[in-house]
Image (cartoon, rainbow, N blue to C red):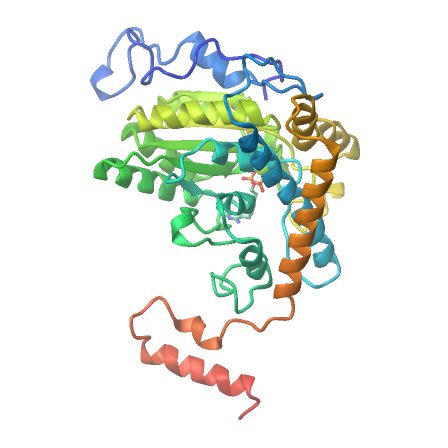
Length: 405
Ligand SMILES: Cc1ncc(C[n+]2csc(CCOP(=O)(O)OP(=O)(O)O)c2C)c(N)n1
Ligand SMILES: [Mg+2]
């Protein structure tokens, strides 16, 4: 993949597709002599690395997005909550109290900053590490933890593997699904429907860099591009797809550059920089809201933890690589800036940590040992009246559970 030379886009992504004067590839252009699909600037945006906040927490004030101090604090809190939850839940998994867990450690900025840049009515279509975005939107922590235990309080009725939360409909957060890339055509469908209805809704669709190799990536992005559906695709390039490194995932220069072939802007951003991510998402969302179609943002970050609690990354990657990226992680640099800017101090930070840790302890205590959802829920919510075969299978299961012959 391209080197990480910081390169800021020369101009915002405000062009409605390829610049005027360029010949667009397409049915009507077949046979055109000179086909220029994108400009050097478009290409530079897609292979550079846009960053505002340096790894040691410094930023040019002129480039910092205009956000109230309370907004920055809410974002920091959202990122810290993910970090503390991951630590606690991984411990519970190792203790055998939770069946499975998957961390977002090191990627917290990619989960929170794009969501913070949306309007409340915009949809979030997550990949599989963005549960923290639902919490940021207002999913109660107890509901999130109930899903991990798959107990009677789980909104999803224990139907999904742990860390695949759903949220109440009004939060506009699609339930997490593990099937790689399947969320992308769904995101495009939601956005296209909004466009047809004349809603000003934007859809934020997450994917991992590994998902760019799946058919649904092409289907979702191509359809959104052709129909100018209001989607912001955020490709979280955390360098690994289980044990497959990003360099073995694609022969493209970068993941963002793939956007240009679809005729949409691609922008490559430092994914551990909440400011650049916020600014890039905001620009892309505004563009989409103006009817100018989708954008593909590549957020360059690193999965500091294992793929999941079932994975041992020491078998396929060097500890030195992890250490290099740990020094660039998003929480330390954001915290450094917040303290220099006078938005946060040591006492407030300690209080925030203590509050969040207590909330996590309470949420676990309220959910551990709770009964599973009723057996009957196995056959509910699909048919108005479950067919007789399902009723019979349920009755069999109930007999077995009761130890009856
Ligand atoms: C269609 C499909 N194929 C394979 C898997 C197994 N699987 C789960 S996550 C994953 C890797 C995804 O990598 P990436 O898209 O980079 O996301 P990351 O895990 O790094 O967040 C794979 C292969 C799956 N869940 N679905
Ligand atoms: Mg990945």
